[in-house]
Image (cartoon, rainbow, N blue to C red; front, side):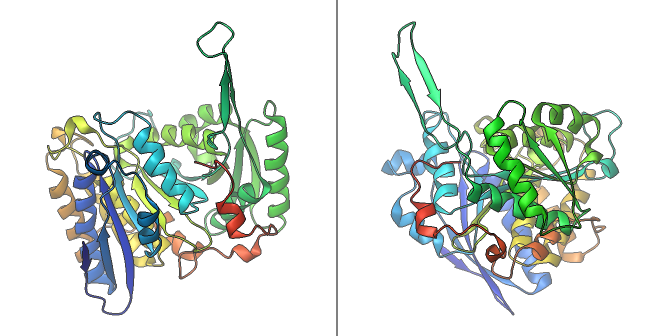
Length: 406
């Protein structure tokens, strides 16, 4: 069902995928905040609800169909809630919807801010907001997630499993170039995180790409850290990092560690970015569907609202993005707890509090805001200048590469 909104000067087409569990609750809270941002900053949205998730799968047996892909491609961005249900075998929805969406929409990178907002508790003793403000750029289509491998002699003592990891210059260069571009509008520091002393061949490729792309960004300082060392440095000295670029598997692990620093999975946001404007990017909180608390109003909508802020920045609405981030941070700072009944307000009530602050503009602006920086890095259509890249791979060839999942 499509719900047109007023468009005083400009409009964006948004596909809304609430999903399962607490997904619909946090998504509705985020849409309440979006309504407030539209009224204040003079833009509109045309929203289309898309029924993907456990209930839809149970009723129809459908995951992500070609018809749905076609419909989604007509939108400027996707706002995603959460997916997963105890009623569906683990892996079916995740691979058949989330990973399939990333593949079909050519979402080249996963972008994860790691920021501790003032007043938000963290389990890391002595950590202050001034020391925790970084962004992790994760290559989103290759590495160990290409879903290629085999098993022989299954069920016997001689069973052998082979799992492949694939790295191409094209995909790595897209991630690295974006990371350089982002670093150039932040504190001009970029760190490559890998395991070059063990994964030698993949490490050579990543290092070569860093060196090659770096020639276009002489103002950006670079360094390198092994992924195991990263797991030590990140909680102890996060101020060492500004922008971190890494491969798919390492990024999957390190970003969840980063979420712990900023207060937990409930306050962490993410964006899966299409960099060439060929399909919509997708923005989602990382907390999952949490079916055990679904319907109780105990889910913190901060991750969804910050994902909304990322989406607005990606669409070029930098002022609105910064306002949503500031309002979300202010509401988080006033909560007695970050999750559950102890928050002292329901999911929707928290969304309404954030919306009020967006509307009146009283929340203190966040310095060095990633949300507004995205508006500077991405073009007016939500695409980077991919012509800057030296690689030339036809879109059809990339889309038809066998078995590439994120």
